[in-house]
Image (cartoon, rainbow, N blue to C red; front, side, top):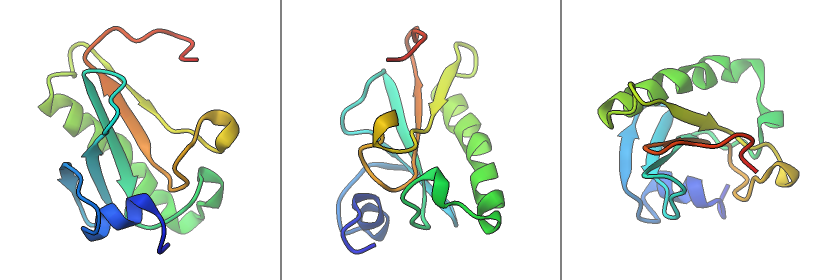
Length: 114
């Protein structure tokens, strides 16, 4: 998508601090962190919401928890724990319509989140 923030970041058109860059997924630091560690794990292929995924996307989406584990371990969150969140649609809090997962950790997280 030409006007998608995350697509532009992936192409290098908008600067962001990438902490992971794989074949199908990349991760960046969130510019408005809600926890000491707040990363966004983002598929390179544009899908507005989870509802747009197809069977062809299963392997890519399935890789995200493993990527999250690696990023969490690198940041010392493997012992204290972390939260992996994805919002689907405006009513669930999605504000950028390109699928992305929030990795949050580094402080006690409350439930329910909001």
